Image (cartoon, rainbow, N blue to C red; front, side):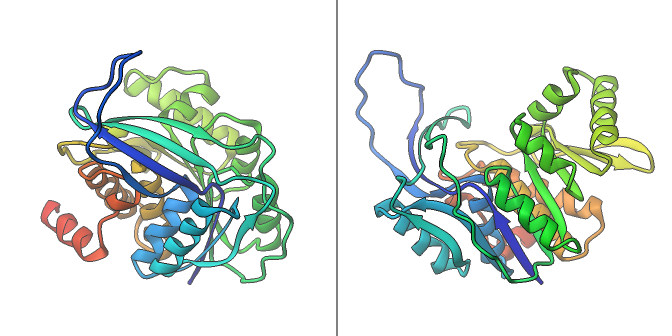
Length: 297
């Protein structure tokens, strides 16, 4: 089973604070966590950590951060043949303030607007293609080249390129914000959730899953929009929780699990991740995940 992850890879620098800083003040911090990040990048890292045969396609700078991302991927078993280290761009960097008292995070990301992969022929015949919409042209090319692959899109941003790729996906796994913006329906209760869900289902004509943050996620079961509840934990940093959900979702699909089990497992992976600081530091091992998941049955 080969999984190809295409999209965004960044270098995260996270500063944990127990109180969000006031504007125009100086603050002495006592810790800093550094690791790779980005939706498709984090999903690829999780899948390799859980023993999958994973390839990552994306672009970083040929600089210190880019080389750290490459080495981090290689250390966990991600194939980096299609990770491009470019002299034209600096590596995308994200500076994150994690408010450990609430679990929220504030992210400042720099990425050049014209930064994209150079054309390359990826010849691996993947079973699953996981995309986050960042590399539109490469994603479209691979979906068209491998029509038998199961395509999963992490739809987090209401951009034309992301929506175009949704029409080509077997699973649109989107954020609540994406669903509200595309459907023009604020989600406030079950009725509005059903209306927004049906709008996306009719629009993209595919399987829809929407993540609802600490409430869990929703999908169609026997024709009804059904919420799969999340796990309640003490959050210290929500960075990467959505990426981890998507990686775990792809793992469940690759394992041929029933969709409800896929969603319950992904919920647990995303929820447990917020108990640790730093996106990739928050990815539990498969043994840890199985232990927690089995206890919650």
